[in-house]
Each structure stands twice: as structure tokens, then as C-alpha cells.
Amino acid sequence: MNTHLKKGLFTGGVLVAGSLSYAAHYFYSQAVGLGEKDFIESMEMENIYENDPWRQEKIWYREVEREVITIQSYDQLALSGIFVPPKKETNRYMIVAHGYTSSFKDMAPFVKLFHDLGYGVLVPDARGHGLSEGNYIGFGWHERLDYIRWISYLLNRFGEESQLALYGLSMGAATVLNVSGEKLPPQVKFIIEDCGYSSLSEEMAHQLKTLYHLPAFPIIPLTSALTKIRSGYFFREAAPLKQIKKNKLPTLFIHGEEDSFVPVHMSKKLYAANPSSKELHLFPEAKHAESYVSDKKRYKAIVESFISTYS
Image (cartoon, rainbow, N blue to C red; front, side):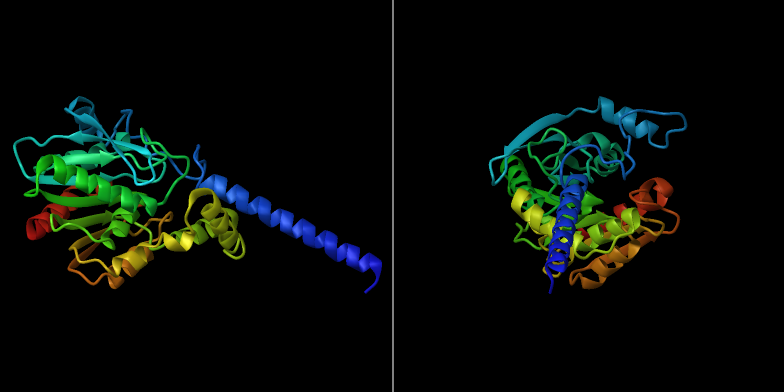
């Protein structure tokens, strides 16, 4: 091999390595790092606009009594959220998990839904979101341990006779599904998930293909390794599909069939893998996280029926 060819190969190798390193850092900053995300639409659940389908829920949410609560995570972060007390005395409490880049501020429809069903409602801000500390997005993996602490908080505050349940939307759905694979106290009665992804690796690969028209390999493995270094987890760890195989709780799966952000086949895969009592309900015209707004009456009826069966 002549000298010019060696130099050319070396230079080419350096350029490829540099390009892949740049791609991994860029994708990490876009997906895992904090900051504005141009590739997703904001839920915009604080302001009221003309013909707002959530107008009444938002007005109610602005005025309802609430308490800001802060606990400490297993890795010494201050995690905050709000607690909306029930209408009347009860032993039933719902923990509501918000989605990607969201916070408790964006959960008015879901808080009101469970409040109207007689629950006290706790809405934690995920690490790195809202009022909670953190410098990365955990995609429901580290948050699963945070939720065990929130569960303990409710039991310590309201007593061992409490009945708890978990609801999650999008990344929050992945969070509560990850919680399902952990050892939970008997007071946790069921899980409701809406449009959760089956695994972070699969969701990242989907986004890479959809947004950038790029294959998963080698960018996803490289970004995953960088995430392990900077945020403490590999993408393959954050896999609700693995966790749910250990699930013992009745679980309600909801998904919009027109969801292009988290494809509906992911919920079908999760449903098939779940060994516990379960229901799957699809909303034909709903996009991502829009099943409720697409058919409020049906959504409420499904949730209320499931709760009455398993609470």
C-alpha cells in the first residue's frame, strides 16, 4: 500500500469518525439534552385560545386548590410536583405522568378527569422538567425509581389503607410501564397508559428515520453510549417492553391509530407482551396524545369502566 493511499484512508477514517461523533452529540442534544425541541409541537395547555376544546378544563385547573410538593430522588435531585386534593374524603390517589418536555402545567384534562372520578391527584414533574431538578431527559427509565419514591410519599402521608393507581401520557406512559416491572406495594392497583413507546431504542430509530431519513446504525448505538456517559443510561435499558413482561397489575392501553410520533404498533406490541389483566382501546382518527380530545365521551367511558373493574 503506497503512502498516498495510506494517508487517504487515514484522512477518510478521521473524517468519518468526526462526522459520526458530531452526529451522536447532535442527536443527544436534540433528544436527551434539555432545551427547546423544534421537531415536536408544544401541547400548549396553559393558554386558552378560540374554540379551545379544553377551555373548561383549563379554567378549572387554574382555579383548583393545589399544593406544591418536593421530595428527594435516589440520586439527590429535588423533584417537585403538585397535589390536587379530592372533592371529598377518599383513600384513592392517582399519580399522573406527563409527556416529553412537558410538565404538570400541561395536564389539565387528565387531572380533571381523575378528580371528577373521586381521586386525589399527584402530578410530578419529571427530572429535568418543570419545577424538578435535573440536566437531562430520562425517558421514563430513571423516573421509574423516582415514581417509587412518589408512591412511598403518598403512602406515608395518607396511610397504608390508600389505594393508588398510575396514569401516563406518551413519555409518561413509558414511565408508568417501566414502573410496572419493579416491586410495588400492594396498594398500587392498576395502570393506565396512553401512547407509550415500546423501547427507547425503537422510538429513537423511528425518529431518526422519520426526521432525518437516516438508518439507526451506527448513530443510535453511538448516541446511546454518549447518553450512558453523560446521563447514566443506555437506550436499551429504557425499554418498557422488557419491564412490562414482569407486570402484575391490570393495565389499560390506549393509542391513536394516526399517531406518527409513537406508532400504534408499539402499543400493540406492549399489549401482547403484558401478562396481567389488560385492555387495549384504539382511537381511529387520533394523532399522538390526542385520543382523549378526539372522542372525550368514549375516552371517559373506557377509563371509568376500567377503574370500576379494578379499583
